[in-house]
Each structure stands twice: as structure tokens, then as C-alpha cells.
Amino acid sequence: MVYLPSVEIEPQTTADTAVIWLHGLGADGHDFEPIVPELRLPASAAVRFVFPHAPAIPVTVNGGLVMPAWYDILDMAIDRRVDIAQLMASADSIRLLIDREIERGIDSRRIVVAGFSQGGAVALQAALTYPKRLCGYLGLSTYFATASQIQPAPVNEGLPVLVCHGSEDPVVPEPVGRAGYEKLQELGYPGEYKTYPMEHAVCAEEIADISTWFQRLFEAHPG
Image (cartoon, rainbow, N blue to C red; front, top):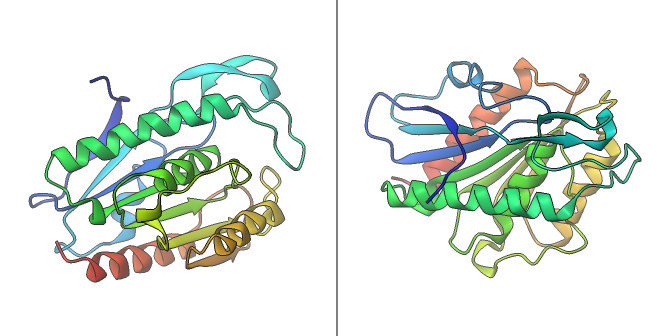
């Protein structure tokens, strides 16, 4: 089996929880690595963090420049036309990483799938269609690219979600992120939507909220 190359951060004790966290366009798996200590999770939360690297592909909106990307973005219009086939292929690659965590002994109900920007769109597709119950989905400064065609797996009906967005985001405007969250609610996913006075980024208040959410999820599904 060929897996995406990833940065992995192991807990001090044997992992019983996993967070698979996807970066955004042009970044790599190291992008969110520094956030792990900032989450200040208790030692009892034995979490393995997996930060996969996207492959390098030409990106149309950047003049065809080759860079790390989960899929091609065809234009920067408000509805963000994207290469859905590439997005689906990336989601398949993330499902393989989820499979691997289960093979390593992690209960699927203790696996969170997270992503920033286009990484969040892929993470959402992967999480909602995964055939075993997961722990939750975290979307940061992202959008629901496959909302019109997704076929969610019944086993993940009601999956907890947390969606965070910058109110001043010039890349993925906040109304686009909010529309994606509202679509999730229509589909029956309980969740929280939080905004922060920032652009296309992550802030300290957001990290604290993510930490609180993680801990609540992990307590609800003891290892």
C-alpha cells in the first residue's frame, strides 16, 4: 500500500487517538506542526498527529505554477471552481491514512480529520464518506466544495464538526465558509461555527477553541 508521505508527531505514551490534519495550497505537512504544543493537550490525551504532504501539481489560478496542492483550482470566483476528480482522489488518499491508523490500533471513533483551506475541503469529503464511525471533523478557513454531489456514509450521520473562519479572509470569504457550515447543518451534522478577526490564517484564540473541542470529543469517546 502506498501512503502519502507525512509528518507524524507521537505522544509520550502509546497513541490511542489520531488527528489527520491537511495543510492548504502551497504549504506542506510541516505547516501545522508547530500548533501541536500550542494546543496544550493534557498528557492523558495520547494523540498521534499526522500531517500529510500534498503532491506537487500545476495550479491554474497561479498561472500553472507547480506547487503542493490537493487539487487544481480553476478560478477564484466566489463559488471556487475546482477539479473535483482530483479532490476525490485526494480524499481517497486520506481514507487510506485513516485505514492505517485503525490498523495501528486506533479505534475509528477516536480519529479526527482536519484541514485548512483546500485541505479542509478534502478532509470534509473524506470524513463524511468514510465507512466507519469517526470522532469528528475540523474545518479551518475552508469551504464545502463537494456539497452538491457528496453521498455521506450513514455510519457518520451526525458526526461532530467544528468550522472556524476569519471574518476578514480575502482568499476564502467568510460567507463562503458559513454557507458550507449551513449545508452541513442541513445534512444533519451537529456542530459549531466560530469566526475570528483575522484573514486567511490561524490565531491564538482559535487554537484554544480547537483544543477545548478536541478534549471534549476525546472525553466523549474514551480510549
